[in-house]
Structures are given as C-alpha cells and as structure tokens.
Length: 299
Image 1 (cartoon, rainbow, N blue to C red):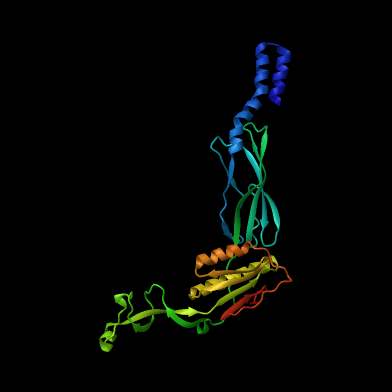
Image 2 (image 1 turned 45 degrees about the horizontal axis):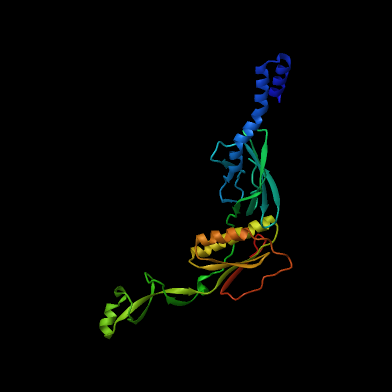
C-alpha cells in the first residue's frame, strides 16, 4: 500500500507518461503475482514431519513440511488433535507441543490451512484434510505378583510343524514323506521296522489378559503399562496369548504371538473409545486369565 500511495502522489505531482506507467505497473503487480502463484497454491501439499508413534511423556512438536513442484508459497495451518479414548480435543499451531502426558492415539486433522501468493496479498483455503495419527505408547509398568504359568499352561504335546529341533520326541513307524534324518537307526535295527523320531511341541491352553477400557487418564496409563509389561513377560516365556479388552464398541480380541503382534494390538486398542460404565465383560473359559484393574496393585 505504501508503494501504491507513493506512485499516486508521484503521478499527481509530475503528470508525465512514465509516472502513469509506474502507477499502472504497481497496480497490476499483485494481479500478476496472483496469476503466477496460482499453480503453486493449487498444487501445494503439507506432509507431516512427526513419527507415527512415541513413548508417553516424550516431547513432540507439530511440524508439517510444504511440498510443491513449483517454488513453495507461504502458508499457515492449524491442527485439530483428538484423543480417541477420551474424545478430548486440542487446537495446535505450528511449533506447539502435542499433549503427550498420557498414552492414547491422537487423531489429527488440518484446519484453517491458508496458502498465500508470493506477495502475501491473496490467499486460498485448503479443505480440511486428515493427517496421519500419532500414537503415544505406554511404558511398561511391572506387576508385583504374577502366578506361576508353567505348571498348567501346557496341557498336551503335538507334532511340531515343519519339524526341526525339539527336546521332546515321539517314536512312531515311518510313513511316506518322513525325512531320512528323522529315522532312529538303532531302534529300526532292533525292531526290524523303520522307526522315526517326531519332534513334539507343547500345546498350550488358552492364556488371556483382560482389561476394561475405562478410568481416569492416570488409571489408563497404569492399565496399558501393566498390560504391556505382562504381555512382554508372557512372550519371554514363549507363551502365545490373547488380549481381551472391553471397549466402547464391544469386546476386542487380539492374538499375540510375537513383539510385532503386541505393538500392533496396543496401537489398535489405544485408538478405541472408552467403554461405558454400564457394560461389563463376561467371563470366558481359559487355563489362565489375568484381569488388569485400575489401581496400583490391582490385577
């Protein structure tokens, strides 16, 4: 505006052709800048620059990087963040910190995104766009007492899929398809029949970890921390198990056979809605079941 005012004063005072030409150029410059900026303004995309998951309490700021095939125009945005479990909402500007004091899945949506032309005089609104979520994972919380599992977790033995090494074997007669390295040659020579050693593995009964997805944020942190610790403890013992959790959409069952399954299950459960106080989880048959409560020593 200052430049336009100077050109107008200059034209009124001087009244020459180049004063008029300078005024017209200054007046047309914003339109030219807008037309030049439009391709970049329409093609601009914002890419999230934060990790898909972090541990609870870790500081993480809101940061998006503009991507464009043309010279990048200036832009502004605001991020609406919703914690899936509780439904709490925050509106964060660029550079602000995510609320990471409690675990949960943060659903993110870009709002009030404005892309300006190269002169910063005109702007366009980009429609609301869902950004990638941020999962705030719990930290393991050790449980003081865990019952002995080995005495009843294995109920029987079954042939080990694919064979391989095993401390326990079953002797049986040869059937077509058995490998020669399974043949027990001494017993074959003694009996006169081809005898093979079949590797066996324990067949486990159902092992459950149950939890009701409700409580205060501190209670939920403790619940998820105990669930994570106990599930890791079972995996270290070689016990495959299930996570059975009551959520706002009913009972969710997650099978856990390795660390990747556990991470995926916890991330999924952190994105569920809190269960209502009127609902209760029905008991199911299992060889071993641990229901995690909300108190420090409650399990």
